[in-house]
Amino acid sequence: MTFRSVLAGLVVALIAATAHAAPPAKVLTAKVDAIFADHAGPDSPGYAVGVIRDGKLWLARGYGQANLDDGAPITPATAFHLASLSKQFTASAVALLILDGKLSLEDPLARYVPEAAKFGPDLKLKHLVYMTSGLPEYTSRPRPNGDPWFSAFYFTRDDAIAATLAADRLDFAPGTKWSYSNVNYMLLTKVVEVVSGQRFRDFMRQRVFAPLGMTATLIDDDTTAIIPHRAIGYGPRSPEIVAEAAKVGFTLRAGPGYARLNRNAPHFGGSGVFSTLEDLARWDANWDQPKLGAGFAPLMLSRMTFAHPKANDAFGLVHGEIQGRPTLWYAGSDLDASSYMVRFPAQRTTVVCLSNLLSGDCEGRARKVVDALIAEGALKP
Image (cartoon, rainbow, N blue to C red):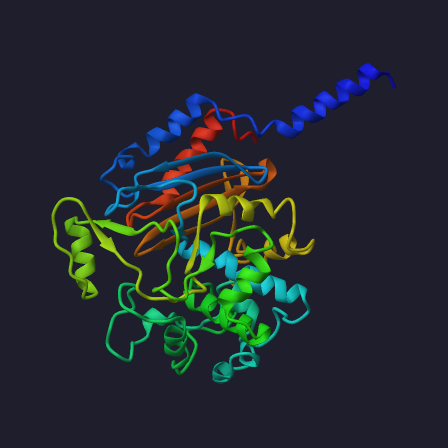
């Protein structure tokens, strides 16, 4: 082999290794800016938008304000409530304990939560993970103090679990139907605590966030805690939002501008994780460069079939497809947040949209970013 051929090989390898490191084209950045231009000003809540390639933030943009009181702009270091994107982190704790040999998806829930024994031994952890448990969602149950199940009113994870476990029966036999339910993932955090002997917050910090370098990510199980660079939630004072708030006993004054919406309920499991674009890039990198164990990603991405047709769920994630490209995605919405994260495994590319706007529609806007990537040749089949 000649020196010239060796040098040529090194050049090719270098180009391949840095192909995703080149900055995005100006036309692509301009297209993304246009998608969020209506919330890019100093008087609006907004969005953090990122494109992650090979585990690195390739494009990271902030639009609007994290805090309208102080005029703090949104940046890649702004911490957003992830809403239902939190479920994949809850599932990661379950996956780690399975890999430790301390849990099995076939374990009955009652082994760890004795109050669930009345629902029978056929209710297993796999049914919670894959949203087919039959457990009634806590929001369908009466709240003892008469308050609504609305995050502006204080209630805990354990309050929600207790309401569900007070039901006389399941809504359907486990595995026979699919029904989205936050309480499934709340109960999974309880299982993690029983098995590990730790608060869920501490388990996640030690086993997931710290190993991945996610220093700005945490479980919000205490709404009095300080979260650096937090994005405060807002909603427009539109007649529609005012009317919806009134239905749950929450008074908003109609008019121009935005109302601050505080998440006062420290429930977690189905939601409750705060994180940043920068930290989510570190989480994303683990799919291809595993730091949580070689078996972690295959387990997290595994599917399971039941006696119903839905079979694209994974561990707090959903398998899908966009324009012929396989995806792994999840979306979230809460009082203080809208969120969406979609990964294209074959392209090792992920689009993330986080918003502190109640009506932010991160999924719809992120799909426009995906369209722009495809149009500009940055997301090839």
